[in-house]
Length: 330
View 1: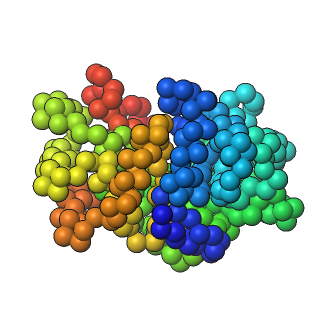
View 2: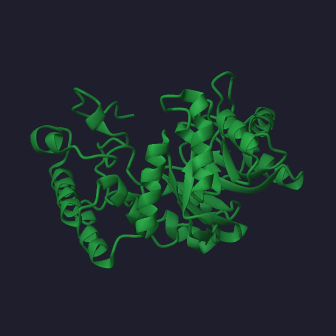
């Protein structure tokens, strides 16, 4: 697998990396993680991403890598574990989470420690204010670096503009951007990726299939239902399906190949639940980025709805029977 430099860290990572959030989500549960991780390493992946708040992901990934005894760059994130009270401004609480991560991952040092959802204070209120972006979590990251318990720091976020303001502090080495970086949803390209270039940060692009919107086709729903869709979005998705038909490329493969060609991206994260899904993703990588003429047509389709309508949900609404409109306005 081709390798790319992860920004100012200097690390070389495969252009496709393992998002480990779902490695216990296959039919075998926890036991399925070991063969999945083994196959990922065999296929050339050398980076895996997890988080303290991804259920048993850290434990499964740590067990698999320990059993396999093969090198792999690992990132995890600060976030709430299901079995304890969480306070994002309690430095002692955050340190305990890191210590548990080290134990679960069977590591003396974490390669990259990210702050999870730093850009959504309504979810995790990490910072003292939204200007300096200082707080106990920042103090802890500095201490952990000085103590040699982590090598690099990062941000794992899902917004298009607040995330870029945090990146501009210059305190972080990598950024993971999700929900705003897919063939039709491109808000991350407006602020997040340009700021990463200014800061020489490594970039992980996650959710190239847009939280399930583009993981498969919903032709029937697009043609006969999906009353929640704005008319421009409906026309846009139909145009994307037509382009995939013309190219004879399945839509999840199309998304991965698009992501590989985005300038400034260090690695694309994929979150397989099974080995079959993993190998499909690897086949997409082997085909390389989309051809220039296809990208040109795709750019025209993306321009049909350049920004997300305000009432459009992040999660795929096609999977929610009876869904017809947004939730609370606050």
